[in-house]
Amino acid sequence: MATEYKGACLCGAVQFSAKTMSNKVGACHCAMCRKWTGGPLLAVDCGSEVVFTGKDAINSYASSEWAERGFCKQCGSHLFYLLKEKQQFIIPVGLFDERDDLVFDHQIFIDKKPTFYDFANHTHNMTEAEVFASDAPSET
Image 1 (cartoon, rainbow, N blue to C red):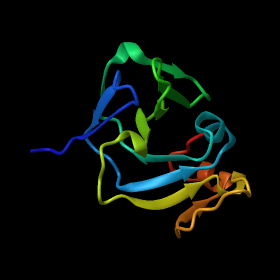
Image 2 (tube, rainbow, N blue to C red; image 1 turned 135 degrees about the vertical axis):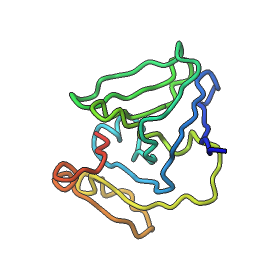
Image 3 (tube, rainbow, N blue to C red; image 1 turned 30 degrees about the horizontal axis):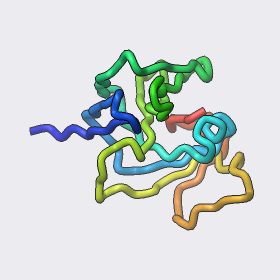
């Protein structure tokens, strides 16, 4: 039987399941993610096979030519960052039911991180230029 990773927004109006979910948590420090979340976005890559219920409660915002950000219209929970071309969902890790195997693995836009916070974890760090030069999912 295939594993499904389940999660929901704060009020429960939107629920979702993902066929895949990376165990590697990443942080994005770009200005858009920080404005959107009030701090760094901590998220996981869930690929393209994500099914949402409660779609009437989902709204999205096209934050760039290549991506949109989804949120719950009722409680305001951030639901996803979607890379349009690949239909790749990057989902805030806090929306998922608990998992014991998650690892804080990488940080992107590290050169945009404000000086008032630092994570103690040792991670793979990428600057804005490195993100755009790679195939890594950018979260801006």
